[in-house]
Length: 192
Image (cartoon, rainbow, N blue to C red):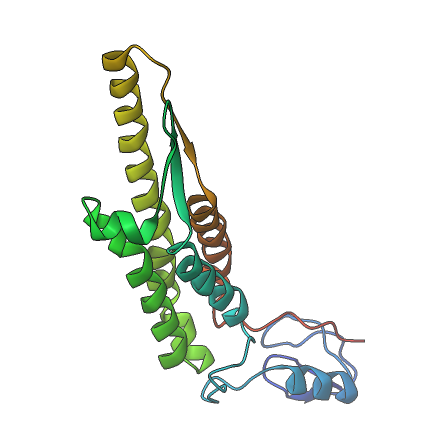
């Protein structure tokens, strides 16, 4: 007797499910398939990295760490370097979006712990994961333009170079963009 992996109904003398048109599997394989899946209403512990939560957690923590790292360096006669935090307290108030987005992602991971709830938050996670990189990019463009203006007005050579904090925001954002569509998705299991 073979079983349909979709409806779990058993059939004699058949190789495909007549209702779902999928290949039938053995009872043992059906048990392995059922054991590997997390039920849609089961709450995962808040520390669990399963179902795409791990990569989003690492990305959110990386973004928080990046907020306290150097944004970039203004290279000229005098080298100036500031962290994202220092710039956010000054004139670049928009940089507060970086830690707020990271905290929003952490809160989302803490609140959404069932697979169904996580799948419902994928679009929000995708939007929140793009915000820090966008804000840092806008600030970077402004700093590069300011360096160009300073170079033309002073006649010297002034350049702007991104720092560790900016690169960490970009890498964390890329990880979060990759991980967001996988949030709450059950892993594919091989049936032997």
